[in-house]
Image (cartoon, helix red, strand yellow):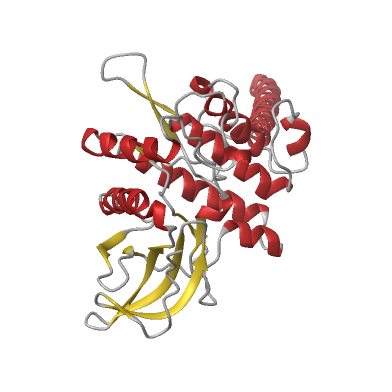
Length: 344
């Protein structure tokens, strides 16, 4: 069995191994340093059985080529890819994502340690929504959106990683990927991703799509918030009742049974200025209509104030009319007295 097991201080290409960071089913990840650049990266190298070397090496190269095309703050970025001359191990070099303590930490780690608060989950959801929107726009379906494959950086932001089972839609990579995957399953259809996260249509033999990524994201967010794995038929409204009402809007949209009905809805941040006006398009042409929308309690207060002000004006006007009539009457009486005196 061919193992990576790169020892500390080992040189692999221009990179020196600093320490191991983690190990998965097919790969090991190390922190490495490029001494010429004075910068540190994460190096991912395969751990392979002899019979898998050629297939997975090719698959690894596809993954590296894919990631090298992508650049977004919410996904890992690949900078280099090669094969170690000494061991024959394929590897690529990517962003080093560590938490504030200098450790690699996934959302699974955050959940298991009890550090995954609902507020943080809302922030991570927005991070992942941005990352998935980007890769989908680039023609990529991740196919393995899981707690383990989301890293948390030193700034607390979520970063989507591990595109090893991604479905690549650009034509030049699609044929190569299909060939390597079919080799693995000897003509059958592979089922990528972990069972909890797999969308129903994919489990039934359908194709992966953006909608299946949405479903995986919904499963993951539900697990982070409620500690519960999603199962079709679960009453999401009841399950999410103790949490922010926005989850009852977002998670059902991600977990909709029909792929065509799934959506990644944005988290609505509260507007701290209730008097901010919103500009919306008018009925047609170049018309623009300005509408000021206030919370109901402010609108009710304004109406009450207006009513009180109107009443005050009415009372004052009545008072003025009364005073004027009194003055007119006194003036008439005075004129009458003057007329009587003049007559005498």
